[in-house]
Image (cartoon, rainbow, N blue to C red; front, top):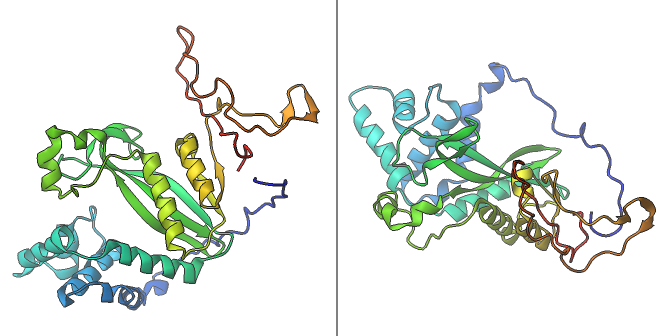
Amino acid sequence: MRGAEQAVGDLTDTGPALVALTAADLADVGAELAAYHAQFAPLFARREQREWAAVYLRGLLTADVPRKNVEALALRLLGAGPDAARQVRALQQFIGAGAWDDAALLGVHERLVADTLGEDDGVLILDGSDVPKRGTHSVGVAAQWCGATGKTDNCQAGVFLGYASRQGYTLVDRQLYVPKPWFTDAYAARRRACRLPADRAFQTKAELAAALVEAWHRRGALPATWLVCDEWFGRHQALLDRVAAVGLRYLAEVPRNTHVWPLREPGDARRARPRPRAWVPGCRRAPPPAKGAAGRTSACIPTAHPPCH
């Protein structure tokens, strides 16, 4: 932690309680969804957009179908009658070509989260998630590591920012990861077909994560003190520096062979060492592994700050 050492209590029993829902508890879910959607309805310019947005929201949360694609949702909620094909096309048009202000929608969502779950010592959560795909037409799809299948697979990958407090937890923001090959000439036709913005440039997952945190900070609507992330994000010191720069404390997993600067003399824990003011010499790049040894990753902690945030 930054500054003086602070006592940290055990918070494992202070989270939101598990709730066992019954069918009776869900009797009014339709009315609750309508009230929730009404918060966002003014952000859709046309009446048809508002109506299809409500259909899509209801389908994602309530439709009992194996795969929640547009066609399955429309048929399950609206029926397979004579107007089925037209209704499927209309919902596809809303999702594929409909225009709305994404930033405004996220802003309303974040304010609702702040009103219902927000606490001053709330926690932001960075994580990635991957969706296996069968085809090659979805934006950003590529052969890459897929956490859902545990191997390199054809998938889309995203970076997500969540929020947790004693009141509950939810998602706050997200960014699609678009692999570097998608920005080459060979993918120009795919970029146009997917309507990838012309000014979109390649960003690593760590850069996307930092951008999500900085966007949360600019909006200033949702209180938080901490950020947590797993080893994949924790090994990127530039990301952690950007997290610290917005005033957040963080708890980040790091690889077990991460280079650190001990605050006590090795072999004599009673002797304190001065806090470093520059990068640890020789730590910018790990030495090559010995012949026959497995490769390793290592990270350096920037010593211009106290090394534990």
